[in-house]
Image (cartoon, rainbow, N blue to C red; front, side, top):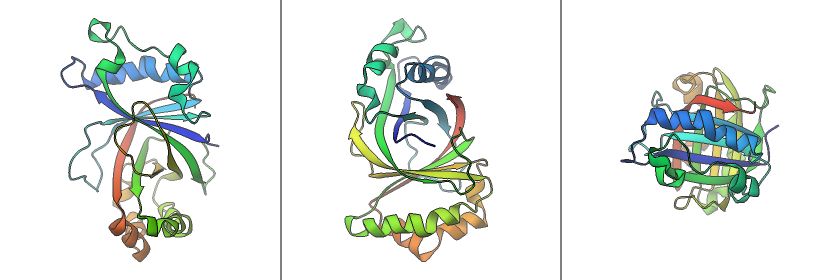
Length: 234
């Protein structure tokens, strides 16, 4: 059973600080995820890198190509004393052991769970791939948007090869590192195969009149595919 809250953090090393992607991944695997879970800021955590082996290509690649997802019992985990006192704020890995805030470019978001769709009873896991979809429906379409997910879309997605489950969230309070105004809704679709969205099942799910309506009328629609690097707590 997922926790009520989720902290999602897109990140990358700041350009020009002397930290490449390999060192960034090493820091997450050897220090940061462990710190968040061991301090009990989060109960479980998974770190992903963006996969570009995905049929739907964004017009402009997102600059932050890494994603950490933290299941947590806290609505605002980055405000907790555990995060502030028990999570390292710098690292010997960084040049001149600078604060991590000077090394990383972060976009953190607090979310609240609104739906778990788990028809196969898979439960909590750290899937090898997942698709995140950020959406902002118009106010006039919001109820219909909810009905579309619950009455049609998730059931069709569950027919994809290697489908595990879907989790849906609504945005929560801004974190200190939240960038801009995030879309209101986040869906996370857990899958075993990066090509799950390439086949006829995905085409059937994404071309219904109801789906077409919401994709066309959404204020924001941002799909991104992710490949697992490391997990902690599962």
